[in-house]
Length: 109
Image (cartoon, rainbow, N blue to C red; front, side):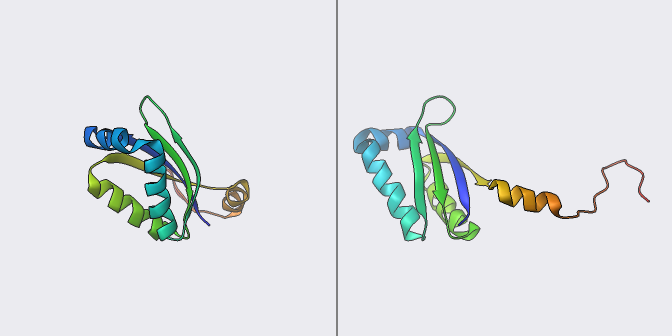
């Protein structure tokens, strides 16, 4: 199952909701969304600094991740970034694939 790193920052309205519900209330809401799309929350941490929330989530496919992202962003409660995570084996496979690429300005032959 594809794995994603989610980094999120609460808006002021989102922070008010967090204060009302507490972290456990938000965890339950996240798990409901993710499991409803066939996924699983591997890890969820609250932080401070640039990001307020860090998640590692497994989804069955990238479309499920996009659906969750659209719903969350439409709420206006969070600003999020999703990063696909790849295993060591997946990067090894990618490194073995031949890719024809010419850098801009390089002489091609």
